[in-house]
Length: 250
Length: 250
Image 1 (cartoon, chains in turn green, cyan):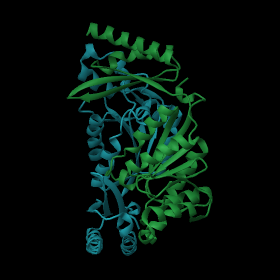
Image 2 (cartoon, chains in turn cyan, orange):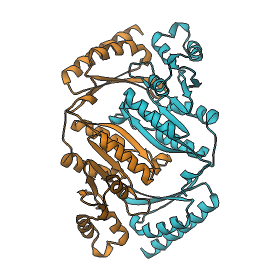
Image 3 (cartoon, helix red, strand yellow):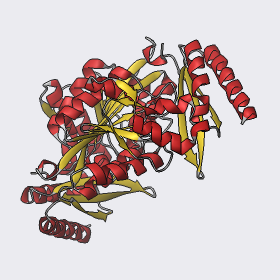
Image 4 (cartoon, chains in turn purple, brown):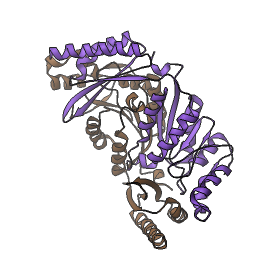
């Protein structure tokens, strides 16, 4: 059984509202941050969808994923410009009206001062009725939560600050997943048979094999992940022995 | 009308088979490469899904997307180890048997030499019946194509070499999308109203507004994308004038 099926590990998806990711202009950094932070907290990111800034596509992705999983995070599309459509999409996904969130108005009035709280900035307080706020210590305008859907900014520094609040205030911690990486210079095919045997003997450990290029040479990282530290250590010992044996023969 | 609705622009999705992306261990680079290369060729990446190394999830994503879109690309999971399940998933998605591809056997026999063509390496020739090959000039083992689904390696250097072949051998070029980026130090809210007006006047130009942090200061990039170069230039002139006016007032 993969740790992904551990009942003590809640499952989450990320929906990236991101024309700029799809066009290749920007390389997404939020998946890596969220995946890593969830694993450390004992949850697992099990799907990511990048969709364009098109209402129908955002609504479809959010509704498909929120029905299947414990948590859905969204990043992007909550600023003050015409292409910021995420709040309206979330309202539509839940069949809720959208309105000025009074608490968000209070926060932004204080953040900008009454004179600088322009109509454009005020649009960032438009949220589905009943949404709870996610604080934004970086740039003021809050994200929000509706049921199990957490709506955050796309700019990584802002998203990370919001996600700290989400993790500590809203997500139930689970069984932390431990990992161990064993690297070598062997070709992947040489470890294939031995790794498959070890995987069979350790059903609760997820063993992944990842070749990469380093300075023009092919390298290999074997990554083991598990909740059970003793099983993880025992499987890692087997992998290390396999690699040592193969290196001696090479 | 967004350029995404241009009938001369084929639409594609990417399915990343990637436990290592979801866990945060690896930051995906393939989305950016594919998105950018497609735009240059006159196609558009309109969705990305990152799914775990779980057969059911890969099959579900591939089948949902291949029915809706012109092309689906997959990256990852085609090596020789137990966690490389993509070929089996694609066979299942199409209801095809999986078998040794004779042409792939010939290629790998030549690449490795008969002595080094081990059983583990031979597993990389298992493909859905009737698959056409995608050459791999970097590390030998080919990717493959079934109908509109293109199966490639996950390692970026290998994927990029395969994708060059896919682009030139298989994808129908369309209307190239031109883009123009205008950067400034204004807050996003100050350009919001003016940008919305310009967007209304140029329906065939997609105008996106992207704030970011640069050296601790917030910056703003306005990105315009369109097939029609004259419309793009006219819209860009309007955006530049808007920003100049606002900078003078600031």
